[in-house]
Image (tube, rainbow, N blue to C red; front, side, top):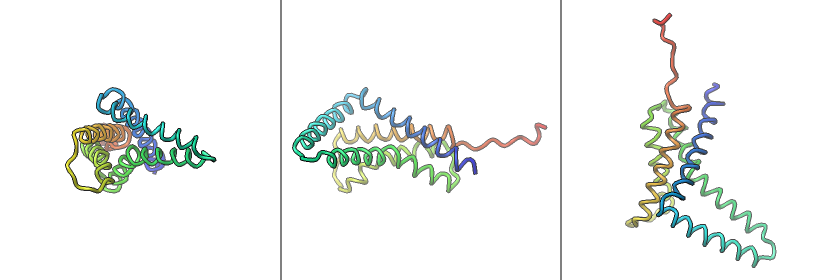
Length: 159
């Protein structure tokens, strides 16, 4: 019972924090990700500034911007480890390989699932998927290190 109330939420919180940090570092260090996120943030920021100064009441615009960023963060960083943790706990799957691969694959697949159109991916899109997959794998690894391993049972012959 303590596992469900304390250990799993704690493990998810730490795993999501570590994977978010990994993603932030990857977007700074990796040249392709730095270019893509830099351009996106630049255009997004100036679009937000233009909309705020053009509006009579900028409150709803800023609120919508924060809500959009929160949705993106939830979809890419929180939802995949949470779903895999729930599936793992319900089915009793405690393998490191399961946690890292399943979370990585799901995280990498989220943009493709949400896009919903079938077309050939560009190299930049594949690169972003690779970085997202590594981000998910980091989350799965950290979750497994904290809460995913089989609990040790005392050896009855060691008495």
